Image 1 (cartoon, rainbow, N blue to C red):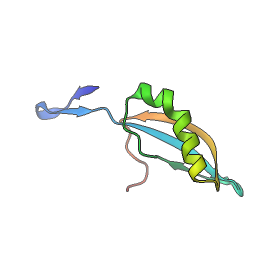
Image 2: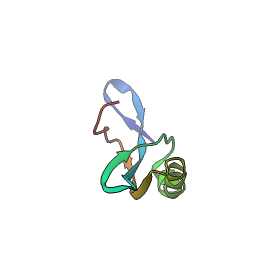
Image 3: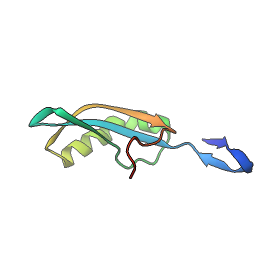
Length: 79
């Protein structure tokens, strides 16, 4: 999806998969993870559960609390 921005440039809609994960040993210790995702909002909605399962399989110390797709929202913490 292309959206108009100042000075005649165009910018691709940025979609992020956001996982809320908690430590299995300490369920109250949760954080957001944003694994790499390069696709549309529809692709995120249809593939998000599978991608979340892959992330959890690679990080067995965590459990998945929830997942969601976000569009054009800045990270809460800088890289």
